[in-house]
Image (cartoon, rainbow, N blue to C red; front, side, top):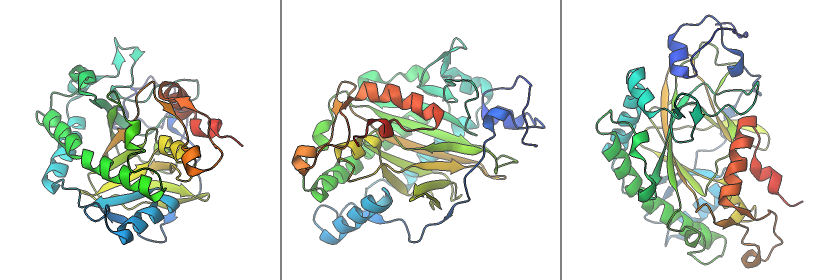
Length: 348
């Protein structure tokens, strides 16, 4: 494939585009990439959740991870490898369904009205927007009253049950980590957990990355930081594709199956008054291998005001207050442009 503009009418689903064998990459996917990433100078910290509440050394390990990379892996979470394998097999299996089956979950209603939830690509918000070389399935898991199973796959048949079980079993990770983070910042242990109300969303984004003949001019997922408080990540193979930005340098993040990776989100950066940073990350494409990942995001109620704990931290506020729903409206606009809404609300 040559990295040139293409005037053909092409499908917006990357998996279908790659399978069609087009001779040229459509220009909306072609971009100039930054310098190549380097390997991380030290392994990703691994935090044992069974020891974290009472072990000072484990808490120190988490603190180091939060203040350096903003991401870490967890052990001792009680989720069996078999469940992690099952949820990833079901996730990958969805993307291997025939196109007509996947389109039943399309995020384009009536073929033209975009919604965040469902299967497809991210919304095109402006002309010449650069697109990612990946497809995704975005679902709301919590609150239970807002699950819309019309957007959920019916095949593989195991998909719904294993995803809901994985989400339920993951709650211990959220509770243990957020309580520990509050202690690290010398806040009340329930400070962060108390921000979540009955309508706080838990969403899942399953990304499917297909091979690309020109991985040097596309990205599987553009540079961004995550909305929400925390995000967890599972992957289906050990392909090195995730990269994190630190001090202007991109670093390769090793990922392995059946290992849960956690990163903090923009809401946590705001609530911690910038003491903890939401890491900017991206996913690169691969010329040979496909990859599927499952990210779970813990958000806040739509009317919740996100604000720094500046009084408790005895610091001036470094971020403006924002309602969650207003932040998220700006988030998607900035995301489409490859910028970050959090940078626009900093107080300098």
